[in-house]
Length: 478
Length: 157
Image (cartoon, rainbow over all chains, first blue to last red; front, side):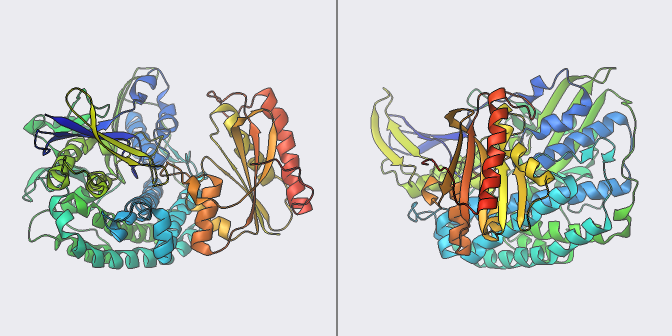
């Protein structure tokens, strides 16, 4: 008889989700689904608000990456104003975005994923958590804390508030950088670079231990979407859109941000509140693509900074040829990007023009459609607004980074479940791998409530009549 | 004594703003040497490093398990068993447990909390009961850093 395994909630990710695994009569996995189980509705309740409120409103989408929404929203507002912001304002926004990458990637690697990477998927869940990391790898845990602290300090120094800064405004930023602040920020970066580089070096020693996972964690070919610079290099704030296929062929290149709708369609399914974006020319559901650190590194010809370029070259050696297809290597890509973020922040801060007082252009709305796209830590983030002649929002579309990966995440959990899950003999380590492949993508689901650590896990095997025939319980004590 | 006051809560959820408001109040005051104040939306992991540098930490928060307007002062100890289910925020005792595990020391810690009457959407706007509690909380915090923790009217955690 067919059966379903439900993993709810999925742990150590940002947000509440459920995974269901469908089994055939022999206990083999036949299908897998990733369910986003909560609904928020920002796109509807923003209607009727003045467009200038959008950055503050949409920053509330997320307690983890409000800076990303702040930037994409302000870019959409810049577009509504039909202006170019002052170059110094752009550099300052870039620094804030890079600091956001640093703290977000640190949380993902050190706190959410490191227990699996350090102790192994089958280790005792009572120790496979952040306290286990602190006890056994205290230096690494302290490094994680420090990197987050540095990232957050940079955001706070620029923005004035850590969680929801209001320093970025339509037209630029509302305050220039002082010499004192510039110097204080620069003083943080050598330590940050030391930490990022030694963590990267350490992680390289772990990668060979995970060959099996690397071969089964979301390796099905997909497209890769990201921003790139006009030269085809790594880009996080602006630039142009590029799509590469799994063979490394560039499918779309140098696409202006305003043309994103030509590339991306959106579908919905009845089992999840998350949208299913797809590459329009290939249709749904064939047009699967991935975004985020893996896609950005696959699409970039170079990072443009010394240490990150060395790391990028090593990243490409993870596979014999072509783009890196295993989603397991999102972890690797995150560490490369952390190095890049620190190097780029230093470059911007050492640019004398960073102290320029002209940081804001002022205008009223000069068009009725605004599109703002930037890279968030988890991938390409799209804010698209339409306003009336009074500047009131009458339509909003947000395509969140995690949403782009929805099809790929569903595909990845099916692949992992097929490889590891035996429906006749459930083991915690099997299901941990199913969760772990989701953690590779570092999804940020609700942007408000976030599952972590010792969330209770109750898995039931039911027959077609709904009778429970097997149960696996993980309590809140692990 | 090196002391950090951390007020935390959402500034847009009514009485939940009482923690940040108390911290903001002290941040505007002339504080004794070694005393500083931070307001935060949530308690995040990187605060552990700040805690490790203190001799005393005073957390200030709203409470849902107390009568509206009731102010409590509790001494806190590290407790890793309270491991929160949330990835991006921690509770004070969990934060102290991180501090102990990572830095081998824990500051003397207190939680001053006040029962909230309303947690509806309202930007830095307290209910009348919470406004009364605000004054008491400020006095409790002052008592802590002036009296070095002596003479507190503690209630059980």
